[in-house]
Image (cartoon, rainbow, N blue to C red; front, side, top):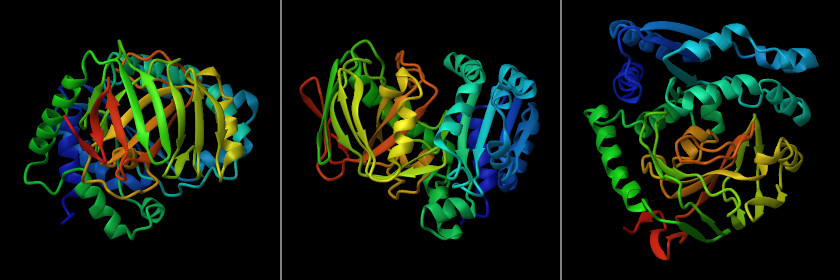
Amino acid sequence: MTHDFAPKLARVLTEYCRPVKPGDYVLVMASVAAEPIVEALWEEIVKKGGNPSLSMSFPSLGEIFMKHATEAQFDFIDPALWTQFDKADVLYSIRAPTNTKRFSRVSAARMARQHAGQRPLFERYLARCEHDDIRWNITGWPTQAGAQDAEMGLLEYTEFMYRAAGLDRTDPVAYWQEFQERQAVLVEWLKGKQHAEIHGPGIEMSFDFGGRSWVSCHGIKNFPDGEIFTAPVEDSVNGTVAFSFPTVYGGRELNGVRLVFERGCVVEAHAEKGDDYLQSQLQMDEGAKRLGEFAIGTNMGIQEFTREILFDEKIGGTIHMALGEQADGAGGVNKSVIHWDMVHNMKDGGEVIIDGELFYRGGEFMV
């Protein structure tokens, strides 16, 4: 079933997600484990008249750097990478991990310091993303490490990703075009609304989003995709959430994360596993304690937790929210060096109420 995975994925990426135009400077960033999709992408880019460039990573290089780097090296901005981010018209970033725990022994303080040192590069990238000057897309490719995290065999994991991306459909491009149309209806209904309440097992929260947009994610920037999101008004979030799924960030897995918000700010935070790391990230900057995103997952082809946020935040029947940097396109203003998505199950009776009207219950939209 999946022998045509790479060619089909490359076609959807270059024709639907981020179409390549003649003359485009197209950057592909990937690990060596992603060779099949890199080759298929390269072929499609060349056939469409694009000018491809490859940034390839090797499994142990980041680990070596984090072990030995000095303060000055943390602050060094690679001019080649700066030029690529500054000049690329299209960026395809392929997630194909060979070891998802490679940074688990690196101290939280060193990880935070490295992130802070690269902030100028991150800000330049975000500035170009804001106006779609760089047409970026993140997609995944199956590896043994990803399969192990998902508690699947590689064949099962590959088939899971194939279905999640709609590549089992007769015409995947048409499938995603129809997906986009369905979500447009939801986003249109939410226009002009002001206030959200979230109730259910493990969550009692509210926030305002007046003046902000709800954005449909249908495969343009992430692939596979499936969510609608907004940026809560920064000082309006109140309530408590005890996330039902583990969360993975910076190569660390945390369990039992519980957050309490008052007037938009996290005032209490605890994790049953990984609490020290949680506290360190909350201290990164003032924006790390506020929500940059609230979203509802809509991809019903994703029903299994994999420890890969590219898939997990899209699980149909869940919500997720991100601490830190505002989600691009919704009108938020929160700034941070982190953007940490955490996922919560809603299929056991959770509700989202918009301006007093039931919008969503138990994984289904009511409007």
